[in-house]
Length: 445
Image 1 (cartoon, rainbow, N blue to C red):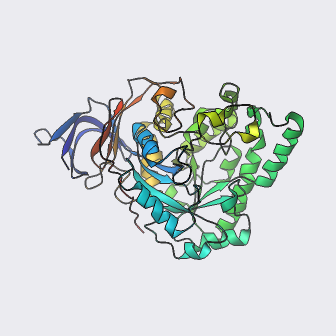
Image 2 (cartoon, helix red, strand yellow):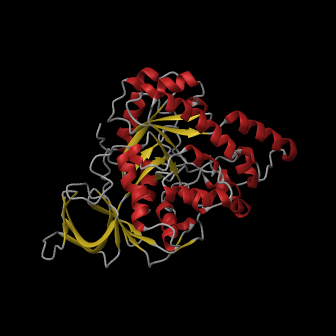
Image 3 (cartoon, rainbow, N blue to C red):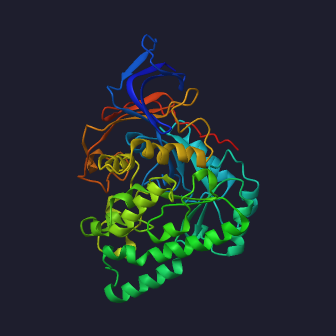
């Protein structure tokens, strides 16, 4: 592997911004500082732009195996690196669901030589695989994923005794999707009686309400607190849920929480123009919820940011049948750019974005030698240009579904370059034809 010298960069790392050069050799950061005269086979001039640790996305649905008409490890990691995401943790709701060691190993095998980004995979939890969870290979799975009161029937876990056994048995972090299905079903039937199948999409956040999210999360956290288990709650979408989470530092918490860029960008007012394209679970809610989530993130109630990338075909998202429109959106290509809009508005600092998308994710999941710009660490890096605008469009979407909920949005920043394991894979608006060098993430456990 050739060496690479990045010069004239503004490094954003561990709460500071410093001007420095970075020398990369054999995929790792070998030196940081004033490196004039350092020999390298390739030089990348950052031109004063900002060099960040690559985003580590703790929640994606890359659809392989079984749902590859919507996405696969090749197409979705192309979109990821174009968006500055260098590592991802993939959810288990594929076909079949990832509920066994064999299926975990199959996912790893599918990623070798095909994934442009580094990868980790969750094991799904159910009432039938608790013995497997107890003996789980802690390098094979990044975490255990449980659905509490949610719509993923194959992994639905509502029994408090089963939840307790999962939480006390898991040797790795348990990440949970929390929505109360009985309440949601009641809301669905109420509005179906008025509108039939053509329920307005504007009611999605009323049907999959803040109360539904709160009830399921509170139910799980009651068990978690009782057995002193570590639990990570995914995609918080409402102000009400924030009541459940401490503002203490992440190192002091057993209970942590994630928010996603679309909950910080969109609101229920956007359903009028976006219709089914904006349908995701949990639902995007009100302007007031969006403001509260931003504040909750700033105050420390929310610990990390993940994309919740969940692609569906554009044709599937069309039409007026609310119940037949699948929930989920392609997000990896635009997630970091969306967060940089908050920087441009003076809400988030670059150091804060890096903390929530890289440092904290690496720490929470105990990811080895990634998530920071440090000598000896793998060179997973993203160079952002805060002065070069970029208009999102369907034509430029690399995900297999070939659309973006940000279509036409004028981002004020752009992704100038992405490096994975020291390899330049995205540069100045184009994917470079490289053999995929994504590696299986290693965990300190």
